[in-house]
View (cartoon, rainbow, N blue to C red):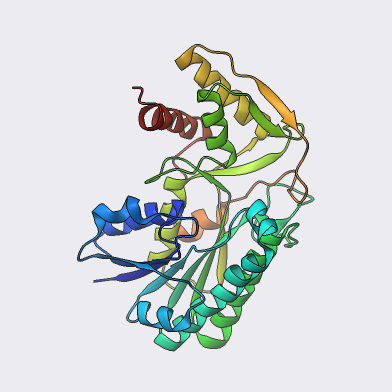
Length: 317
């Protein structure tokens, strides 16, 4: 049986990935310190094919035990988002960089042949052209992007010098209904605000462009990377659809208006320092090399989130 280790398995992406891996008949071990995740959503899957470990990725002895006989490590654990990295900069550097180093050390010592790493659009900073492909120069604007780029460089080094096969996936802005959903990223936040009948809050003029990718498509990309053959020390953009933030707000407001019959107000707040103004992806490379294709549009994902929030949070059908 194929054994996959998932770091950050209690998180939004990690928990949904584990569900998908179990459906494929794989044995999965998750390690998570539960700083920002919750294993309750995975409890019903626990059994012969799933082991849930509470622990820190900076603990090398623990990692060596966990990755024994693993076929692949999917490294999702991180202090994520711009805000959290600025609130806890030392922790962000320690977890995101040193933690990645420890993952790679454990992989090297225990002979794990492949590590799939979750990176971010944040490594590109503020591109002068858009959309960007994987060859575009990286120049992150914020600490989160810096730590992700450092992680990429560590993977490249271990791939070249120690034979640990590495695949780097640069995610866009992930959204959609997983095993559970965080409501603080832009699309879920707008859905929650609209259904709670409070104004949608846009930072700046709303002209910023982001690459949005559904969690279903993200997990598909990860699984394609796990299954890939003869690909090492390579990186891929994982995208779906580029859109202006104000257009996202309009889509949400129109869908909620149709369902609940209420007007949705939109207000503008000051821009946040350290955020790129425009970033979108070219995804030809992942399509060609990993046979990836996205299935969800932004409008489909918004509709799914609205149905989910109304049913699960507000008790409406």
